[in-house]
Length: 313
Image (cartoon, rainbow, N blue to C red; front, side, top):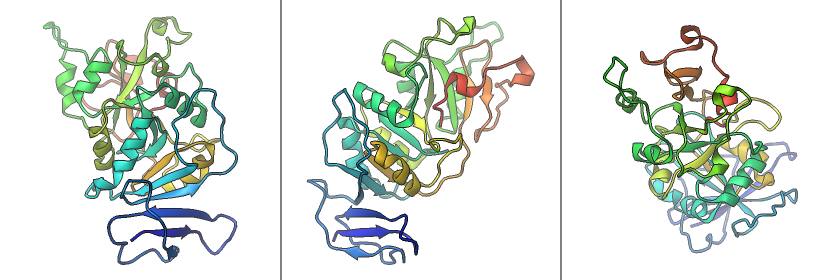
């Protein structure tokens, strides 16, 4: 049975209305701050989801955007991935060109399909990312990484380690690896270097394989990686870790869905630049430093992670 749920507190200043659609019975012990009512099912998709009416303050796009009702789809999923069937509408929306939020093994990410040019432009507008800035990609396998980048450095028989073998032991995991993009990656995802001469000819991209059951369940059903950028407060350089708050803030800006995998810890991935002579950590995060990585102290000055890949989750 389906029901409409009301989220809020004793204050009436910040109330959001959510519609839910389900094929399974509702939880035995609903939250005390929600009130259930009868509703209708979401289109032809018999799944548990919730929607929020968007504010009239929506962005207008010159490029065609995917068509659906003026609602924000909100899906609650167990972090363990045991109810991954609930993610089916999100997967379909992504394939149609939607832009939404999903959890990773670090922080939440705003994502869209790698092959949808209009969705990539919408993602940039929602997050206010300049066209010259690079974007990360979430990959389901090492094969995806091999397709959309030139790959990891390999041993040359002269004492240099085979980094690919080392990387396999930490993926999936909380790392973003900056690699040289291949021709398969759309130009909208990479920038053509910085003003620094040593990076002028490079087209780099950050790649991730998150160790998160919800994220992996979505990626496994996609036919290509997802473009990704971390979710931060619009005017502050701090991560947003509560999916309900994310829906309230970014929903009116044009977001199409939010997957709620619980409140996360503000601990982003460790960013490792693989385009130089040695794998260099440019941002220390959740992933520990491994013996084959170097830091700024080990190998001289390094660029800040935001300069290389500001969207890393």
